Image 1 (tube, rainbow, N blue to C red):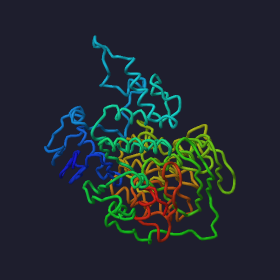
Image 2 (image 1 turned 30 degrees about the vertical axis):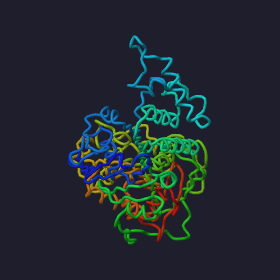
Image 3 (image 1 turned 120 degrees about the vertical axis):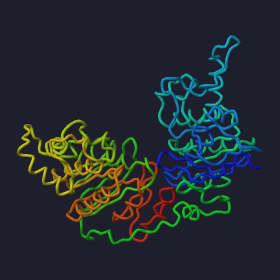
Length: 499
């Protein structure tokens, strides 16, 4: 019997269609997986079901009748609880206070019964005994906990509501293997009690280990509903990517076999990557693929000295180097371009000239700035990228996003870098500027630069990179080249199966 059914759910955010035809049926006492690529509408559909987002079209049916939730509290009353991918904890409060937030037990006088609150939290924490550590205690302050323990607290908040349907949106993202397995044991135990779970996961091994059925979404719509026991992983992957074609290999150029790597990392690690080894040759564009937030940006930031490595070894042109800060990287010939221009690149309120000159001044250790001497050099580089601007004295904020990004690339070209670290550089710019930037990248590689490119768009990696290194949970899980450099193998590797 169906506990919940979503029919033709639609949702727009301005001009963006997040959902066009969201369909889902979850049975009583069932663990149901909802999967799809980033941006396919999974989380939006779950937020509609949980009352956090109002749909523009469609219907939600619970039991025998349709419902329309005006708030998450309405959904809670109907027995639905949502684990938020973006944690909803209050860092300054204790674990017990967070678990019971909004549902605190009361004394006869109406005050919060802190003794009972602590006892209930302790009972829930015991579910993760042996895999969480002694620091996870009712009176511990959430801000002091490690990411995995904060994620467990968020899970316990859901369990504390005793819902009929638990929606777990990437609930294992910060958990280690033992903690994830314990969560699956809890979900199976709740299933035996008749409780249903809707789980969003980017790990196919988890889906096939615990889910009874699978719903696949693509482009804001449900495209497949499958019984796990009767389905192969490759079938799921093909539903996820649809008819996406392999990009033509004409854009790719494989460096000469004799070319020695310019940049080598050996087992490097920082807060977000673990044991990453790779090599990039002159003239080569190497892509960093996988789902967002799997360590690609952290690797680039580590190489740039912004998130220094705590272990491993980096070699440039055969020489071991230590990169403790960006200035170290700049002087070693590394350049970093971020897609988050406002946070990582722009000197807000300053002129285009000042924004262009920054890398040159650091690389050349300039103590005295001579704008008149710098202007011809910087103008030449900016114009070589077809940057459109009124004058170098104009503020950087007067430029479009695409032209700002060209300025930041020109900033590094003026310093003659040997290695370009591109961290989702086309994010948030129009298609014309995007094509210009990708063409610039190819030209620089042809002129001998070594390029590491992370893009949140798989199409860019497949079309422009000579090979793609796929990340999952901070580690390299696959390297794609030649016949394996296509949507199918990239998606399969990103979701947990080496290509």
